Image 1 (cartoon, rainbow, N blue to C red):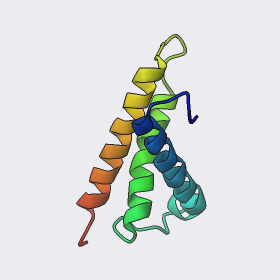
Image 2 (cartoon, one colour; image 1 turned 135 degrees about the vertical axis):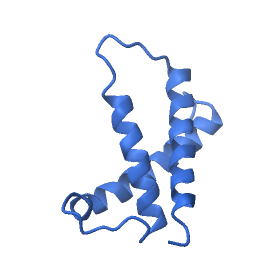
Image 3 (spheres, rainbow, N blue to C red; image 1 turned 90 degrees about the vertical axis):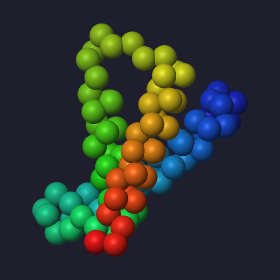
Image 4 (tube, rainbow, N blue to C red; image 1 turned 180 degrees about the vertical axis):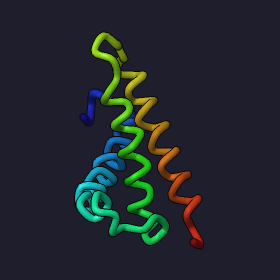
Length: 91
């Protein structure tokens, strides 16, 4: 991905992989309800990111999204996830 995407998208992709990893590590705890929102800011961000990513991946079969739009969307959902993370601080 080093030459295929602009710098901001590469940074976003690294963050996305990290959040996806956090979510995967906590998946079972989240599924059974053992994780409480606000207990860990990174997990909260991973949950917010995963939710939006799932929406994107479930787009209509006929939908066509270019590489630039995909990169922009990735950056957007990461910003939203970071905002959700900040919204749980101090709980």
